[in-house]
Length: 257
Ligand code: FPP
Image 1 (tube, protein in one colour):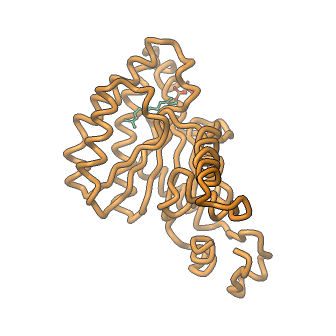
Image 2: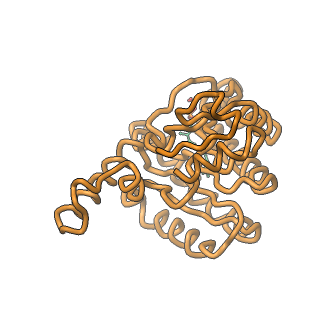
């Protein structure tokens, strides 16, 4: 794919164009301080602001944050309610600043499960910032990688049933167009904070060739310096997309990509 050829040809020391983050460790951050878990989420929102600013300042094109997974509904009801309130409050308080910073906001996930108030804030944030040309900030909310693949498959099936697509046309490239984030460069760098080394149903389709980076830092402690360390680790890796390291070294491009 064009992104892969671009990533190969432009060398090893490039900034990731698209960073995707699992922001883990809020609960433990709070528990370590004898605070309720929800205080960790509140501190986590401050880390979101720091990392958004840092990505925008460094020229990262897209940042996708896993804010609420389709499995997070299983948490204790008071924690879910506090998270929902935090999303509303954060959107209300940050949207002006994000807009002024030329950030374009997007949401991915099954937003129909959220309260009408939250859905309204999400829609307004997207509308207000839709013309911005700086960092694209994607918030994954009630999102799951399997849900994403299933909703893409459903759309493809509908296209086939309507005769607009032939079964033989369903290739990885066509299928990709129906998945979330299809209009953005594929994630180059995946970061998970909090010490666990799992993908946890995030961007399953999109992470096929993404470099994975795991940080011990709990999300509320994650700083712009930590982001730089992750970006340096990314820059030191050789991305091969199925080729040999010799092919990559001599700049060969994959005809099958
Ligand atoms: C995982 O940590 C974190 C979450 C499920 C929520 C993430 C939400 C925020 C960072 C709040 C603000 C976000 C936005 C976009 C405004 P955990 O609770 O699983 O931590 P633990 O593993 O230590 O228990």
